[in-house]
Image (cartoon, rainbow, N blue to C red; front, top):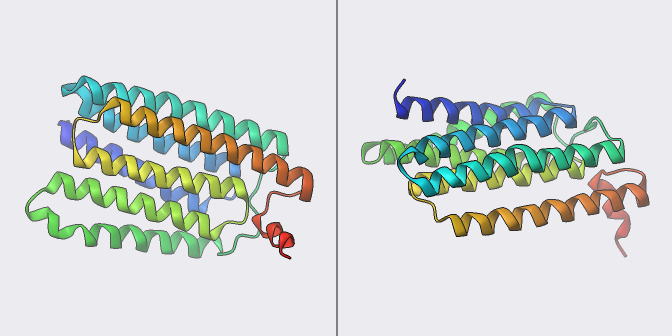
Length: 213
């Protein structure tokens, strides 16, 4: 298996994990799907990093933080708030998945003009755009704050995929800064979820409408 073939396979698996989140009703499985997506993206960075030590180090950091640490924290959050399922979504699961597939196809169609000049970059940007759209779509279709948080994390994975596509050498200081900001955001969202649970006995963002006036 060539390096490019391996990267394409890992990217496809990351994209499949993003689509899977739209069809999963169990929050625990959604978090694990995010962990799997982060794992595959980290493996992409590690594969690219075989010829660049900085990118390889970034891949290890992504694997540790987004593949294990953040999912572990989110699993602890849902265990504490005792929420297992994301019931009553804004958009039915089959419809959400169908729209997700359409968004993926459109993402690659938009990037098709790049295929003639930079095939690898076009595939990477197509993956990045698809993941960002899937993350935003997940945020729109779900009611639970924890699932919407996962959507934000998927968007961030898409941004990381775009960075990988733009350059094979990622400044480790910049990536560490992004990872730090991401961890702070996840911690704040976790605290918000705890607060919502104690106030409304639910983590559905629909309850926030009670704060009007």
